[in-house]
Length: 78
Image (cartoon, rainbow, N blue to C red; front, side):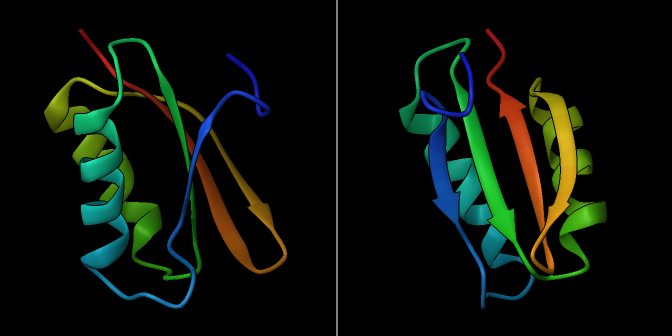
């Protein structure tokens, strides 16, 4: 998958734990191997998202900064 086929979750403007909860919902609905791209401007997401992915079998493919927000690409395990 690439940026064009990623499932997009925009959590800008939300604070912890909402970005991680939105990521969880998207991953629950996605098929195994799907990639979810989460955009979050909460600084705690830099800690919470990798921790969540590690606990749930997800794989962090990329973390980048774009326009004051963090962008996470997470592949669903399984």
